[in-house]
Length: 251
Image (cartoon, rainbow, N blue to C red):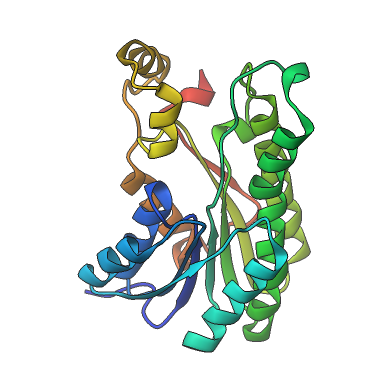
């Protein structure tokens, strides 16, 4: 069986759990050498990667801090010699309130991770990819980067900004061999969504009724989409924000 990422080096941020962990395991199955970054300890994800037949190193990284991101990229190159793929998946949600109720601190927290954090990542990832004349970057946006939701203005603004940043970065690198795309997940069964549901079966059922497919997505389903976006199968795709949401945004 051919492993499509054999001997390729990949960074995955937000790899502690959820979509990031699923991406790490899927990439391990495909032969990637991984750097797994998060503010939380990624050793459990490293263990799962090893069980899947892959290799990985974990690094503590707050993507809102430039020096953390710089060291993360340096670790990838020092450990494996190059950087082929980057999945900038780290992100946070916001509390639900109307736009005038948000504080500056809440705004800065979400923006510094969801938007500025991805910019920091690409700022240091792209120069390493330029050395090889090729690379694939996928940024995790959201359906909130395509449509708006009430009482989530800060999150919506961060994800709309990320979708725009992805498109601009793709144009900047269209002739360099580096492709930049985004994943826009819908409601995926992750700890972040579980926090939003607050354990309420009624809220969960309301969300499911709003999704045409009638169910939440699984992190593993997002991982296979990202695998495609990082593979040569998507070699003519760049600047695309790929929605995987069970049909939510087409209603």
